Amino acid sequence: MTNEENLSKSTFELLKKTTSELPSDVTKVIKETKARENDGSTAQYAMDIIQKNLDLASRNQRPICQDTGTVLIYVDHPVGFSQKKFTQIAEKEIVKATQAGFLRQNSVDPITGQNKGMNIGPGHPAIHFHEHDKDTVTIKMMLKGGGCENVGAQYALPYTTLNAGRDLSGVRKVILEAVLKAQGKGCSPGVLGVCIGGDRGSSFMESKNQFLRRLDDVNGHKELRDLEEDILESANKLGVGPMGFSGNTTLLGCKIGMLNRLPASYYVSISYMCWAYRRQGVELAKDNTISKWIY
Amino acid sequence: MKRLNYPFTNEAVRELKVGDQVLISGTIYTGRDAVHKYLHDKNECPVDLKNQIIYHCGPVIVKNEETGKYKVMAAGPTTSAREEPYQWEVMRDHGIVGVIGKGGMGQKTLDGCQKYGCVYLHAVGGAAQVLAENIDEVKNVYLEELGAPEAIWELEVTDFPVVVTMDSHGNSLHAEVLDSSRNIFEELIKDK
Ligand code: SF4
Image 1 (spheres, rainbow over the protein chains, first blue to last red):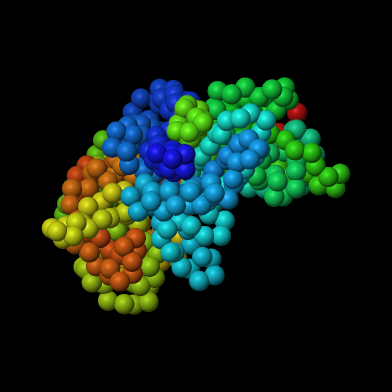
Image 2 (cartoon, rainbow over the protein chains, first blue to last red):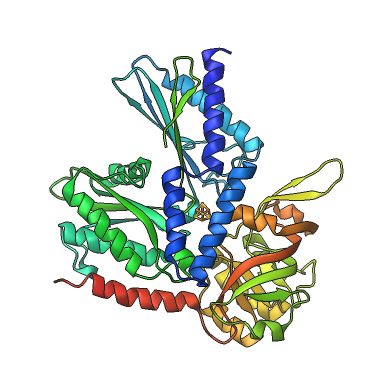
């Protein structure tokens, strides 16, 4: 096979695995969660069903959830890599995966309401390229559904409703309010990706980048690490629970990053990822076959 | 664990309380945005919904061209809140006794449940494979012209797992959890 054919094949493999199998760091936390819920509770019942669903999806190689969401792709590549060619290949493989039932027909024209059924159109897939110094190519992929996307939020501090100022205590208040408002609607238990700072656009982008971190990844920034732990603990005290049925687990994790802000603005952007946290990644060999699964 | 078996009745549904874990067996009908709008516009319903359960679901279904049989590939619940303006009318005019969905519904629906004897059953969002596994057969399809996800699919299910989150006695788990979590939230963000 040519290198190009290998790239197509690797991209398809990545799509297939992302839609049907959660990464091990997430499945591990889901298992722990189940054990933490009280025996016989509706929360545990929901977690049982989630666990069963994950087993079935991975065994039968079927989509974990029927909402296969936005396809987010992050490519790190060396100098000389053709972004244009990769985009063409990715689009072709997404069409194939859609026809094979691995992805739902999910891309809709907002003006006409038309769904061409192939998952290709302005803004979809969302591919982010980054040139790095290494000579390898890595492709990371996430599928993010609409239900959880709808409960994301962006705050501009100060936020007087909660008396939330431009400091970490203010940041903490608005993040917790976002979790409160989401209740079970984003298919809890979920994971938060948060960005403090940036402009409206870059801030939301960075909040999603946080989902590329493994759940057991430790934040190198001391203040942010403490805030992540605080949010996770506090949010789980809210008692919203799986699906909003009440219970001990409302969040599976919280990841927080930062970007410099302008003196005049202070944004906190919160993205919510449902329990169906579909994230996978591959490192490619010289001939574009998969040399390593990243997560 | 409780069971709700076909044929469903008002009486059986009145027995159910918020927090009950229920396994449903029998016939259910999918219906989402387009169907609710269709009924709201006073169109004649192609099936008799009296004592039936409506499932807010846009399934992924494939047709076997040789046998003509349908197969459900994925069938998780969709967000119910969008049907809030219409749901109580469907209870009043068509006599449904159950609604399956996710995310819960509002006061109008809760009042409808109490008045007409209906119950809201919450399926686990995202659990497309488990729920598809509990569907034994696609028995029929109505209003197919609305498109596959929007059509009314008549499904035969066994032990379809749900939780009662709104009952016919005026109780809503969603309202309860929102209240209690808001109180805890107020405590958590108190300035020290
Ligand atoms: S929020 Fe996630 S789990 Fe829930 S329906 Fe959407 S994609 Fe599926």
